Image 1 (tube, rainbow, N blue to C red):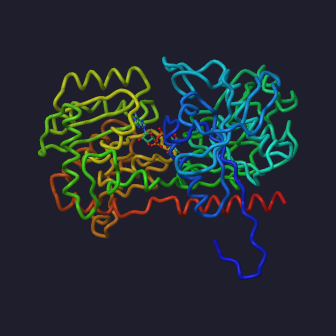
Image 2: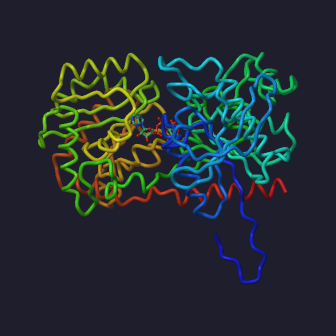
Image 3: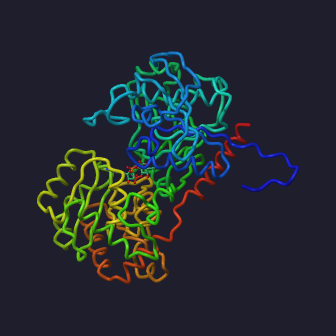
Length: 497
Ligand code: ADP
Ligand code: GLC
């Protein structure tokens, strides 16, 4: 920020309410939680008064014993009564939690039950998040603190711009960040009344989408600005192939659409200070990385050899991630020879496929099904190379964590993967930019070719060390991106004024 001259009027501090369905470490299913923890903190460091709004899921309230009630909301439409609690995240960012036991006091995940089935009342659960976000952003808010900008994230907050447009008093400017267009929040039209929205919002200019109610479409249509999490993905979603049916709308609103690359939390993901790994290291002490490989092999029951490259995956197991291709070529990977460590959960068929593979090759392949933050850190530190063969990837966080941990990523050239990994070509090696392996064609064969290329490079220690060091010195911090968000907030606030 530009310092102001003595005596000049102080610039008004921007106030931003960051509404999100996940925030690490309180509740996490993927990269959205990492972004929701790190971006608000980076915004605060850049001088923005940013506060987070999050549902008070059971596990979140259990970790937030010091929260205090600051407002009550009466029942409305099909929403039960709710309370607003005030607290702080582990990094000190002000946090508002919605306490509504009927909606959020449940076991298992934020979106699904223990069998992986969506909670049947998700429209109401995230309608409530959207509605309270809009209310806090409006002149009818029960709080004195009023945001200039309501920053929404994903479909779960997509109805907030609709509430501000149709149901609440006017208020904050709105920005919606799309982290993954594959999740849209589509429900039966009959829910419009249950959500307390007027019938006249159910039009193509409002919340209607091919005869259904779509939270994401509503947000994309009605937010003052849209961002997504990498420049490449911002382009890709305007085309049919990756537009998930919304490319027409996104292309029509392209003047309002910005691609801003996610950063990473360089405090949480730092091999020199990480408390979750076996031995800390930096680009200057890369030999110490070996102790992490050994610890990882031991923990997973793999043979503790230094002679084979160890490839790794930490991922949601869904079609998006292209891991079915990995399963197809896994016998070739083992025969290279090489080792494979996978941590993930999701699709039952993929889970079974990797577990069976590991049973067949117990010393070379390990599959851990479930969510395990500390194992994810040890994998980043202990693996030689990291696999992300995604069909599409809005940004991706692990390829950035991997580069920081000296674990070159092998990625498909899509979305944020294309924007953050530089392929190991002779030219890129010569100019010191090569940081991983990038392949283009979707499919198992192109993935295998990239893995073979990586295995070859791993055997040439000069090349491998150069790749590791190039990746480790890159700046993936939030600084530049937080500034970019700040510029958009400022422009939206000026427009609103
Ligand atoms: P996405 O958000 O699409 O799942 P990202 O690459 O943006 O993909 O972020 C995934 C985040 O979730 C990373 O921090 C990754 O380490 C973490 N993660 C995914 N699956 C697991 C798991 N099974 N255990 C621990 N962490 C996981
Ligand atoms: C989504 C995307 C992922 C992105 C993350 C955080 O879950 O699938 O690519 O990194 O959101 O923005």
